[in-house]
Image 1 (cartoon, helix red, strand yellow):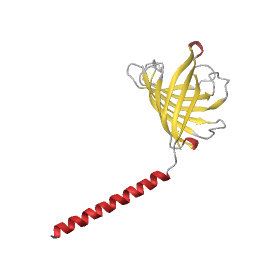
Image 2 (tube, rainbow, N blue to C red; image 1 turned 45 degrees about the vertical axis):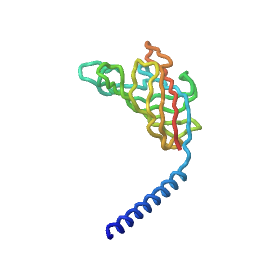
Image 3 (tube, one colour; image 1 turned 30 degrees about the horizontal axis):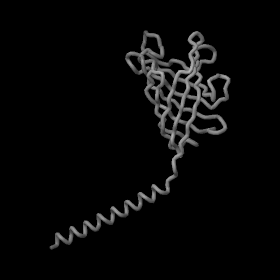
Image 4 (cartoon, rainbow, N blue to C red; image 1 turned 60 degrees about the horizontal axis):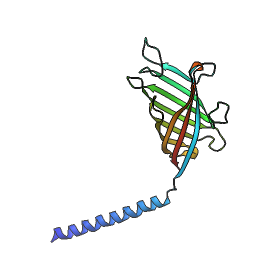
Length: 183
């Protein structure tokens, strides 16, 4: 008899805790802000040679050339981001980070960078982008893992495609299409 009474008390207690939990979590969920979705296209201006270099190798395998496709080479980057493909287009900000040639065959690398916005609409905000970039793929996809300012709590993805390459002067343009959800 005592065991039956104890089980009824325990079941009632569990039911009470369950109802309280559901009520609490639904209150939290309903008070949270709706996520916004933002789509952007931007162009990364990449200079690996000349007076305005924006990518430089800082580490690599001793005795080997430090090239973007040489396993173990680490580059730091500080590339202008523009609204259009021309280097004279209006500035949106800068992409600052690292590229590590992380595949033995040299065909892909780890990309980690912050897009710091300076344009009027997103000034002071950032997006953090990372992922594996397969160098020869026509479209590469990277993760947007966080953000600040207008992109607080951002998550999403960025596709990047080589828009143009000028090998003799060491200049290329990469088009980024970014889709993010944020607060």
